[in-house]
Length: 134
Ligand code: NI
Image 1 (cartoon, rainbow, N blue to C red):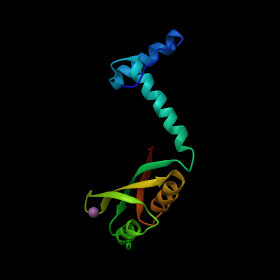
Image 2 (tube, rainbow, N blue to C red; image 1 turned 90 degrees about the vertical axis):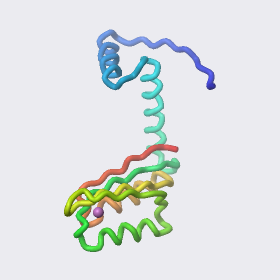
Image 3 (tube, rainbow, N blue to C red; image 1 turned 180 degrees about the horizontal axis):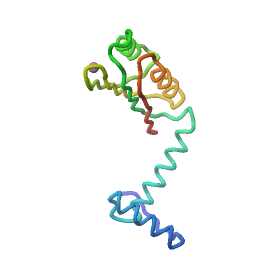
């Protein structure tokens, strides 16, 4: 088990009341747990700002499967060596639209570049890239 160190934090009452309300809604059992997660989140965000950081990302794409050759292009891209796609999931949403979730691994800079290319493909209606530092 990792060694813990106790620290004291001063907060004004109104801010603490808002914080307690927020973490209760989110289901936290203690302030310590919530503060630990906030610190981790900030550290992770800071790491992700560096294009050299190793990361994994889930790229969400909603596209019309009637769009000219988009599905083929997506598969082609995933087989290319340029893209470090480690997994993908396809869901047929309705008669027209498909959801594709592609998991990428690599450096933040590369992932963002590939993600932008995917999102800007003709026929993609909605998309986003969710990054997590590894
Ligand atoms: Ni489909």
